[in-house]
Image (tube, rainbow, N blue to C red; front, side, top):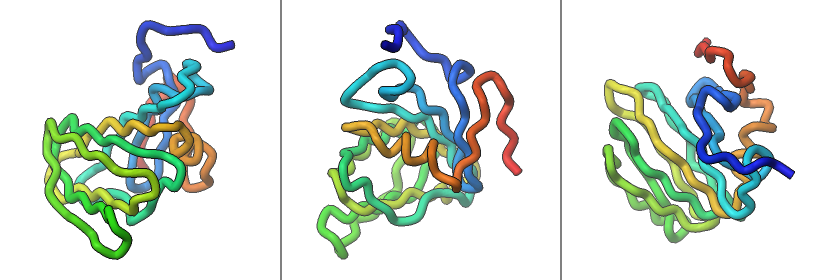
Length: 142
């Protein structure tokens, strides 16, 4: 069993990186024993983001910590709704809804992505698209 922790610092966890994102998985079943939710701190550099995709088995919340980005969600497939999301905004993405997020600004976009149930963070960690940098090492974007 995984020991309970009062808090998790980004320096204590691995970094997941791809050419479009840098992330820190701060909560998931394998790390701190939470069973029904996971949380990932994510940075998108200017001009970067993720293409349209869905999480068939998980709902997602995106809290914008800093910056602004273009957000698209298809609440009904083929009928996208779009808007600019900014610091302090909370985006709710239903299970299976297609969505995309792109940083169109000059500064990094920082978000906290929360998934329920967990799963998308494990898919990122285990994907060949992502490099996994051990905790304590400084991630360097290539």
